[in-house]
Length: 611
Image 1 (tube, rainbow, N blue to C red):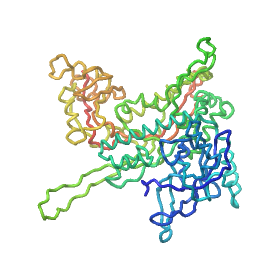
Image 2 (cartoon, one colour):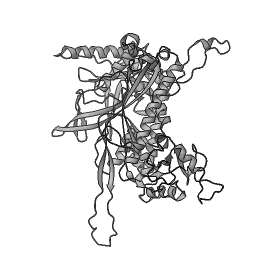
Image 3 (tube, rainbow, N blue to C red):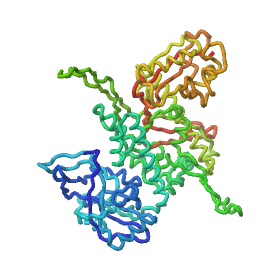
Image 4 (cartoon, rainbow, N blue to C red):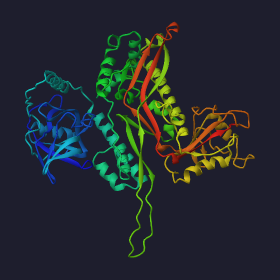
């Protein structure tokens, strides 16, 4: 049932339409029973029953549930005190959007429909089911009116409220809905179209690897994410607890995001009063804290800001030069993208899970079913079933810090802002990269990296520089486990790159070295190479025949390295530790974890010399 998209249709009248703002207030769901093939379905409207994350993340307003006919966006959705789902929707200025909006204003179109899928339901009595967890995914203006208890213009009849605070919250939600900021509908439509194309592309890419074309079509049709599809593929091979995700976004518009400044907030905390010197950033931090359900130690940076991607503007009047008097947005990369670009393991193919909530479990198969040839008219021999286990990931707090001068922090130029963001992203990226490769897993607050993962392949270089056979053996370790697919690559440090560029397959020199094409775009036996100095030359020198230190080379399918990121970055400001030098220490806290899903996907040597 959870994988089947369902619909309910409702009527409306022409009330609650704001012609100037092009918005309509409507109700899209109620607890009225609805006849299904299995009996009566009742949608619970308890606080925790309705997952509104999709609707409140810029979900589309459609015509007759057709994803190719977007006529607007959903600006805000909530469950009101009368136990109905209510939303404010905004129509686009496209030809189709204008046509439907005019029909709504004229009272011609009187059908509202919601598309949703069921996450959990219980049977209350015979042929009567209560849906205790469900997720609406889009709202449509439809041609089939039905239940007139909900829709546009249905007055909110607030029942008797025993708790005054609940009534105040309800009123506040009404005000927020009315004061929702203006948005660029065309930009939102283009963004939604691109996200939809990326979603479909990723799902079909996964399906090709796992021969799940039919399941992919179902998940594309039902609006599911690539992560949800990936989990469905895995669930077909065994039971697994679902990964719970929660958006760290608080619904900021592009204009709101552009106003947020790391430097201003850091400087305000250095002066001891975030609310006084950076009131906007404090408001954003407080909203993020409420969304995440925890308090910031310094100030929170929401996912809206972390994922922003602002582009360079064009001067308004280049011919006269007047346009150059207008400040231009120069922050061309999001904070998260800055991190990813600096992570070698991410470039090599490591998967990232974002917006995580609580501990998660990832399935892994530990044994396959036995197969037999069966003679005619002979019973099949008892077949052993596949066996599964679960890989757990738990949030581990990563702390990284930078030291900034007080003079730098009093600047609010975009160049300084970009410099500070870039430095913060670099610190986090380097540490994630290092622990993904070399994390010991001890103590328990440190992730377990590839080299410390039990069961990966091992190649003994004997304390000398690796030869061609050693590099082939790394691949062979993975291939004999039938794991030589996916994002295969070699990863090593710069000294090892220099070594392999001077060594040759036959050991005596020639035209083609072991590492072909240079360190950044090189290949070894046809597989990509990535260079990072996160792998040091400080392993052990006890067995190094050259008298120097040893290092490591990792080969494998980096798709099986999974990096989890829990929402939000918490930034602390310490103006005291280095006050004599006039610098401020900025500490960034981010909940992360990493795990290798299949040890068989990797092999490494940890005793290779570089000379």
